[in-house]
Length: 498
Image (tube, rainbow, N blue to C red):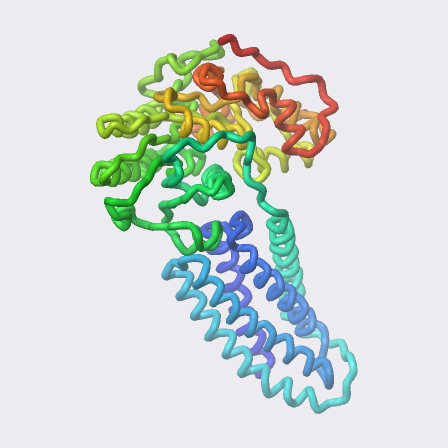
């Protein structure tokens, strides 16, 4: 086996392992392209992948001579420096799991071996006359070409993510809500999620002191700034700390997979255990927080009410997992009332925002003309704009008469079919696909109820308390979120009677 073949084998090993690291750790687990705090790391990744794209093509089709060999050596050195900077940034901004650290060690050793193989060949080629000589290495040429295409696409994908993050994240300031006396410190769980990120940025914008509970305090501080107090254990917060409001948003994603027995236990435990830890913290504090705002869901009402208009007085639906889960969450949170803390159980509908959440995949499908009706499409679709959800949470913090259940849904209700039509029209498309109900039930089991059996809920308590929605209608919300004017027929909606 020649030195060239050995070098290609090491390069192939490096390629496959690096691709796995990108997909498994960066995309699926860390979700770097969705983290604003990962902008600098993604910039390094994009630059390194662009270098690899050039190197792969050079190795595939060019016999490196003279200045070209020196150029390749310079790119290899640049890649090494970028990797060192990437390691430093990872240690600063997030906590790497053991497997990712081990994988990075193997990649580093492999890259060192590759450099050791290439160095004598490049040294020899650098002393040859400078010229471009095309060569062919059989299947290795095609492998390197495919690798060049793959890393180049990944480089562009990361560069686009960096560019999108470059748009300043504006605080979700729906309206000016007076800051009540004593509500200057807020503890937030689930702060790095879709809703939590928007809430923390708004609270910081208002000048409030924010404490966040996060599994990765490094990542939280990198995302929100060093002025944030981030902890990974509530026991690290001293009892004498003054916390005026607690907003509990943490919990595993309800749409993370079929509701198997194991999945149900995880969904329940991820919410209940943190709630109990919060109660333990509140019980040992010298002064209990004034308010606890705990996120439940509009799924509290289950499917028993059909298309009937319901408000916060409607009953739960025992036996339905989505309802039982919400009942358990709210029951645990309401125990804080024994400490003298006002409790508000926020029940959000589908949250629409331009920085993530449920809208992003649906908007992508609509742009490609693939928006679809789910089942009959006549099921109610309770929704709320992200700005209004943040506004309602802030309103609940400062409105002393607000307690108990709070439907966080827009006043103007719509059906899933009307939502699909309005979203498609916002991109100049129409809806022609339909996903049969039986297919969704077969694929998702009871989870399909979230898509096929909506709740026609009214925000009675929000309106009665004086909250004014910034986006009361779907037409206005989508116009703002898609930055286009809908040319479709106005979305049918059901007015709220108070």
